[in-house]
Length: 239
Ligand SMILES: C[S@@+](CC[C@H](N)C(=O)[O-])C[C@H]1O[C@@H](n2cnc3c(N)ncnc32)[C@H](O)[C@@H]1O
Image (tube, rainbow, N blue to C red; front, side):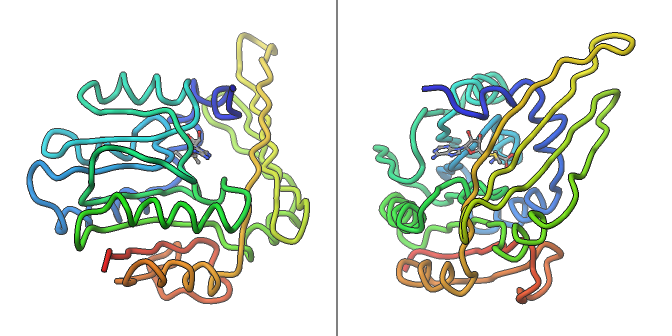
């Protein structure tokens, strides 16, 4: 089965994945929890750009549902182990010291029971006192975006249009139109629709507390989480 991200894979790093520097800052700070040769797993690793922060000193693993995104990941980190699979429920032979799931990847799971299932799979794959880092788009952010105009971006000579549409109380679609400049006034149009779910922040944090001790939560500016936060980062530890 193909994934919506297969279409985005060729330009993901340049156009979409590069939009968040906070995830790299957060991951660099996670090195204090690790020893040399620790096992690290990224859920929804995409092109494995995040994992490059840990290249050389650690054993790197990634899971993603998109075969095309994984092709880029394998090329970028040939020593990594990459698996095609569903992060809502995964079973690997290895155990990990750090598992992370960033850039609202968890929002791609469409029901809250899948979010909980991911938490349970993470718990089962972490070593004792292992660390889980994830982030999510808040319901507040997706509600605001769904009431806003389409916002265009202009990477190089290309045009990227992002439009968030609300489908139900907890479901939204990111409608993506990417006009790739070919020559003069000629563009190729690549279209993709990415569904995202969002739930109340308190509900998500209560869900995580059943499986982990929360070490820290931040908003998108590394400040305290509030009802107006657009993204929440959470660092949790297996108990
Ligand atoms: C927003 S991208 C994030 C990629 C990368 N983590 C980053 O920070 O740039 C979401 C990724 O999650 C993957 N994905 C979405 N749903 C998934 C699922 N159920 N199982 C595994 N991967 C999934 C997509 O294929 C895509 O590569």
